[in-house]
Length: 399
Ligand SMILES: [Zn+2]
Image (cartoon, rainbow, N blue to C red):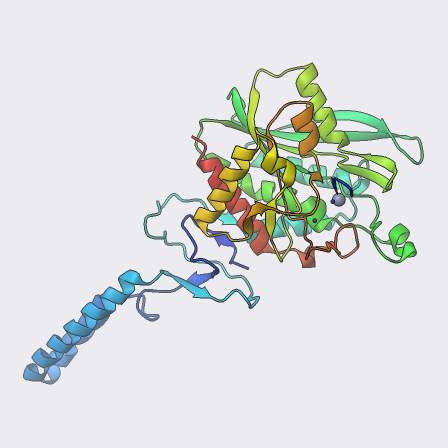
């Protein structure tokens, strides 16, 4: 992925509901101190004891306590049922309450950012995952097994290309996971799962050649969100089918002019046109660089301006706003439109796919991008969780 000229803690179990603006969900706060009782239960438990001490005093006490109880109850009905802390600190994420929030159904699924982050670390443990590498094959085994165990139908779209440096044939494979495969109208969620061969934006020329590019954010983050989302597909409305597609060779690029971009997505788009399937994609979202611990997701310029993707962008950013996920910033950002896998999908296959990408990693200079600094420690469970939660809720709204 590249810009048009080149390219950018909540605990971590997400529940349905809205977060107070600028707040961080930390833990469930019982309604009355830590007793687990509400105000009336708390005081009622003490009334018999008081009556034994002095009956006439108890009557007086009862009157006083009733007043206190009513006023506490009034406060409680206003108070959020979640502890809210300023977002400046970086606390160890903790799991939150199992109880549903007010107005939430007990069947609400939980998008577990912590588990998504575990997947990200596992993917990065394979090292660099450029197309055709051992790391890529190990990742394929992990992801294939993962989605099959969750009930997805896994399919590979295999083809070969010529290595731009050695001239050898390189086996490539897009990995497709079908959910509810009989549905004729489908939603496409995608990410690239290869990593750039080298950290070629390192300042030191030796590190550019010898450093290991892990692609925790640029590569693993989108895959990790989809792996976690796989746990929740069953609770989504059944109106649309859903496909996850992991693209190979998004950046099989050894130097800026040696190699190519979007090879896997271009192949996928071309096959969609040449051998049209019995279904069609009505909407799609590409997830790329969504794990930065300093998450800020502006709208990507192409996605926010193409007539067929603009409504999808609006729906997703509206969903984030409804949930109180302020990291989705409802304006076009980044100096350039971003060239990414959504381009071939849109231009060749005419599938309306928008790019959800945080192209400020960690800030506007994007200095971790394509360097050895793009490692799991620069990503967070919180960010993965927020993105996954928004995408889940957007899917849930597509009825
Ligand atoms: Zn990249």
